[in-house]
Amino acid sequence: MANAPDKPVGRRGFLSKAAAGTAALVATPRIGSSEPEKLVANEQDQGHQNPPSDVALRVKALESILVEKGMVDPATIDAVIETYESKVGPRNGARVVARAWVDPAYRKRLLADGTATIAELGYGGSQGEHMVVVENTPTVHNLVVCTLCSCYPWPVLGLPPTWYKSAPYRSRAVIDPRGVLREFGVALSDDVQVRVWDSTAEIRYLVLPERPAGTDGMTEEALAALVTRDAMVGVAKVSVRSGAAT
Ligand code: FE
Image (cartoon, helix red, strand yellow):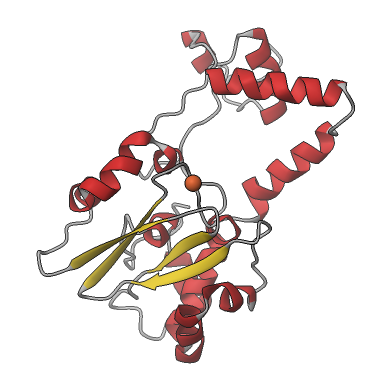
């Protein structure tokens, strides 16, 4: 094998290995885990010889046919994936949240018109989706889900985590949101109202978390560093010790 033992297999490498039946897709939709999902197996994992998923094989088959017929350019596909993997992501959302915490006028506009106010910082949807920002308060906690599939505010949060797309999260977030939140480590008292927002292709939600205590005087940049992806989905709170996980 050409790759060093600990070097992750690149997307294209993964696809070619998937076609050969040697790659392992080890997505682990564990609710409550804040660890980054491991979607692509490394060489060590391949020792387990897990078969590629049906989805991975179908994607590879479709891509192969489209490339063969000259309908798509592999470099273009890679560029799109690269954009969503490294250029858009939760740091964008964190900047929106931090701005709202330090600028009351921005916060007011953000809650009134999420799409336009997020766009003020240069983040916009490529799919024409409408952004709605919902604010957590001492008495209201917001939780975002897509019960149908995996609709997610890509421009501000990047690619959705595996657990967000998992059937258990999509169903249980609606049936038992407090239980799901407990599994993520968020214990809410009974007097806190939980609001669950079901995303669609047209409307995507972003949670504006509560600004944590002990952050008076922090710069906007330092505040943004505290804001995690999970907090903006509503499965975590922001604390002075959070951040850097995403
Ligand atoms: Fe969806």
